[in-house]
Amino acid sequence: MISVILLIIVASSAVSGASEALDSSNVSLASRNGIDGGLSVSNDASQIVQSGNNNVAGPSMADFMSLQSVLAQLQADMEAKDQVTLAKIQQLQTELAVKDQRIQDLEQRDYVERCESGDLGTPSHAFTSGDGDRHLDLTATFSRAFRTTPVVTVGLRHVDHFATEIRVSATVQSVSTTSLTVRIGTWVDSRLYAANVYWMACA
Image (tube, rainbow, N blue to C red; front, side, top):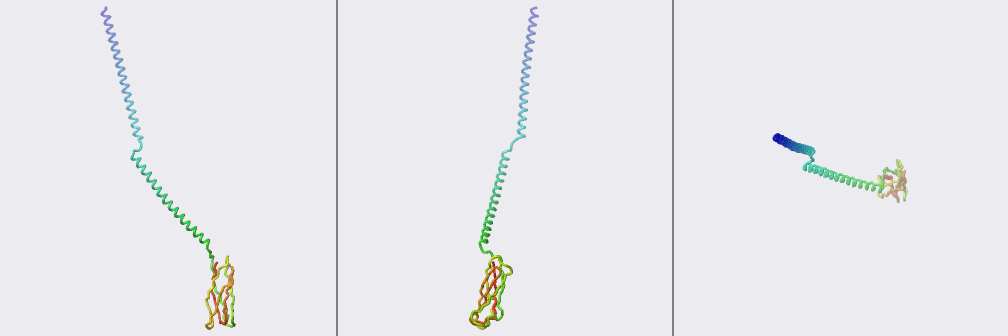
């Protein structure tokens, strides 16, 4: 009877030990599985992160240096163009200043709008008799009136005189915007058959 009781106790102990051993083995196995699973998940996550990093990797130093070189070249080109533009602007300003000065010079000097010319002459045998001062006043009318009184110049064109004592004169007596008068004459005992003058009026 005592032997049977001891056998039961031993058997129970063995079963209990086996159960504890089994439980301990299961826990250890579960723990090991959990750790392995965790490592696996960690490794997978690391691989995903590494893959993501590879996919979104930034520019390399060479790319950065190349971009910097391009920007520097663009800046240099822009500065060169600015210098050319500035030079052209300065040249235009100089040319405008010269033209302005020319305009001022033209405005300050006397402006000749137009000129008109012609000739006047005495009749034949105008001064073939008599002595002393003899003259004729000859008038020319302009084709159209000047805006201001013109400046008139006269010069002898033809003189028909007898003998060697040649005495003849031609002077401007009066000028208006519409006409001029020239006096042709001789003096003493000169015999002047005829005389003609050119005239020019400008204003």
